[in-house]
Length: 528
Image (cartoon, rainbow, N blue to C red; front, side, top):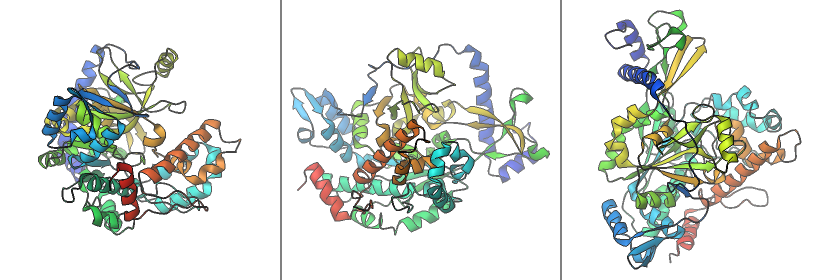
């Protein structure tokens, strides 16, 4: 196994010049070898948790919490908030109950304790790749090819988050993923100002992990966003400015040797057949727990107690005050969102449990076979599909920082490309679930909370223009059903979370003004 003493200084210099964290790569090699040696000792198959698992909260309908009154007061004191318990909750004897409306109001009052983070992907390269997008469905691609070309031409070469999140009824590209996330956050900040009456406290700081390839482009985009009509008046009204993002840049790991070269793996040193030439590769967004660790400590010192983390390309990833209140009241290291699995959810992760009862995210086909999944579903269990949205108790991320960084599984994949035969090591954020002793699982509506777009075709299927595929017999029924669900979700999101009016007679949505937003918030929370 490689160490700095066994690797050529020329290779180290080459890697460092490419932005590779060589010391971290050595640590990764050591962890991979430790896992390999332990592999034969691992026992016990993964299975789906039971439907009565008390760690799972169904968020698709009304949700409530009942707890001892004194425990609630102690929790509020620990969080350094002082809500009027008699006005928010319902007290009966020594207990207090919070229904959905009460949890939502309490969550809003907790916003000064919450930071909102985005895991930015790379450039919109594979996202706009024609071959990969046609593979989603060739017939649907043909019907939406005009709009595909419009967005692909506009977004190619941009960071993915700076690309349009949808295309409207008129064929006009909509705002970017990041612009909409920032607008949602500002509307949440406005809710806090009106519900609490507090006009001064810092609220809902925005942070992100970028890459060396996207950091400069995103900084430039945020300068423009600050003047955008979607944000400018809200920034002035709330005193919150998400365009001044707190950022950390993810560097690279070195490519590793291919499995055909045997074990233990080493640093790949013959890129393109040239001796002492390595490759710089991203190490997966699970590296946020290392890259953002100093920022997490800063936020904790500033009084932040919870952080949201989610992917930039999921429009449904917004701050949910009910989820925040649940985690604050019930405790636990984290709360992760999962949606009930549908027929089209065949790739990705599902909620799994091992024989000891520990929960994790298991990839279909790797951690749990498709046959076993179908077998357990046929027996009455319901699979929950990973929505890649997590809410964390910040103490978990700061107190156990090193254990998390090195404890998340490292997935190694062999590659056969122009540079040669090599391997890439990556960590996935959501596998941190397996390190939590007291996790909370939130079962959510996929239409509301998981409008993800790994491919541009998925963006188009969620856009109003995709209505033209509804009556096409060439498009498979499951694709049409998915598109209808995504469109419903986008419509709800635009109106309820992002401050857009319902479509007019032409199908065009108007942006609500700050006074209109304030009026809606006052009605919602009964504020005079």
